[in-house]
Image (tube, rainbow, N blue to C red; front, side, top):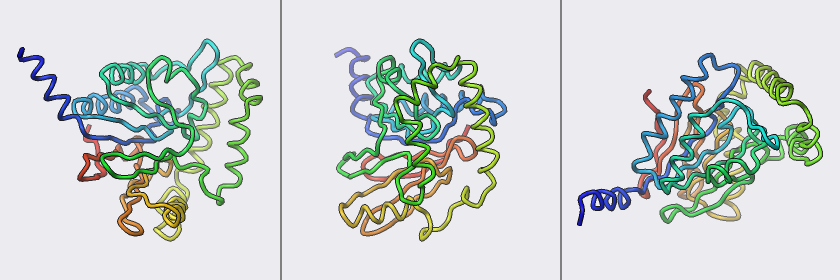
Length: 262
């Protein structure tokens, strides 16, 4: 048997790790060197591709994304190319829409072969049950955001926004993003609120009353935690790639929250 075939076989057999990341915010106007920011995340994807079986990107990967009929936002070329490389190599890539990239439609699945999730996703990975979501709009505490999300997901509102010239639409989105980040990044809610007050932890505990899950994995909070809850369950907040550069990996035996060393 040729050596290259043997090598390919062993690489395939060894691919069992499942990776999770969120909140990269590619193209964010508050990130000074957006190109280096993108390159860092692409280096991580390049590093894990040798042993990755599946990759879950749990929302806000883009700081803004809107697919016009014949136009997509400028930038993030390295990342988009890497997505194609991963899926072409047979690695399953799951992309969750977040509150910043809620307007992902068919371009990513059609052109890059990723699986897009717009709702929480339940699956079994290496014999353990996972509940995954970006984390926005899941609880009754977010009434104002739910009203806003209802507008953003309304088909007519999306058509009206599409009628704006991309230069104007993207400029408005970047302005809104900057103001939102400036308003929220130093607020108390940007910090971990404790197990009793974190709404996604309370949400997970309510889910456990109805059905058992081994792992709850969320983005959105820009906080990195791995916390045991209930009876043999854990909640993981994935952190972000703006300040923390954190991700999680599951190999069937160990679930671990890690920091990417640039």
